[in-house]
Image 1: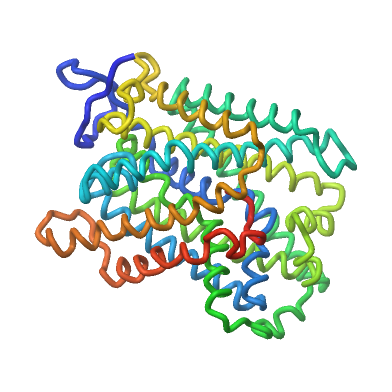
Image 2: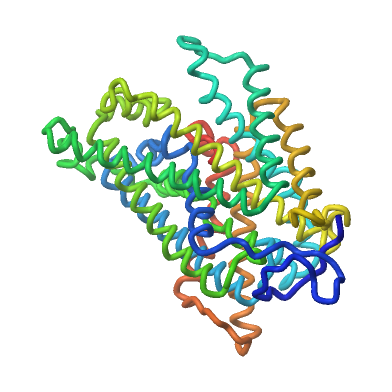
Length: 443
């Protein structure tokens, strides 16, 4: 292995620096791979298993659909702001790279250690456990709880397999991202088409839409929690920013990926929720622990097993996307001197950040042992929102202090300002006790 050298984001795809000074990661992520990475990380287990959290807080189906659309709009606004920051700071690492460049080492240091040691490994471990639960369930029919040793063994195997794939080849990892993203989109389309068929047969619960806004809540706290629930299912909209140095033609492809992936996911989420509302009664929706499974039992009949398979593919793909992006943040932090230099090294043959991947794997495996992450993820989620708000603050700071910087892409202030406000106020709704029991599983 050789240590990588910092670069300015050129367009080449060769693996060695000019002059033979070191190695860097290849630019192997094209536009559609970027779309797959962004959409694949956003579409996790939440939309299949427990999307009713928004409905619980809003009180009416019409208002809940408006919240889903609003969450998609917020994700789009945030991603466009990040795209401008990426054009100004063309480095991998996402929030860490932007905060380091603009606010300095101390804030960036705090961000990176929270991210590398807690947030990302905990999310990988939690999603791997979710993968294990649905992969193992067919082998234990009728069991309300699976053997913990089996679950943790399968989760650890999932993590180790993804480590092997990501260490072997970035191209292989992106191919896996693409395959899983296509499978997720196809699964959601099956739910959408199934709802349309039920409606065409006249068996849908159309009365739900006759009083679409009846019983809508007026409480600001409950509306805020509904948005917080919805935004959790859009988490991953910033994943491509973690790998900008591996993106081909990043100044164009990043913006195009945002414009394609987020509207696609938002449309699918809206149509899937409409399908759920057509097939399931309000009581079934509120009492279901796995809404897509309940939907599949009523619509797919003997093919209902496709839904757990879709959840397995979804969680596996999400974990792979987290690995791919999270290891790059660790790699960039080591390159900047905030992590041990060993983690900034690149495999001399495969040109992958192998030490960073192995470090992320080790922390995730340790976190698999306790086996329960809802409290950790819920407690740390407010740190994520503070980080988002601080990152958007970087953009506003540059707009005020450095107006004359050349900007290949510029987002209107009318987008950056409104997005900065909810990012800093969302933590008030995510503190422990503020609706934690209704939160969907991590995506």
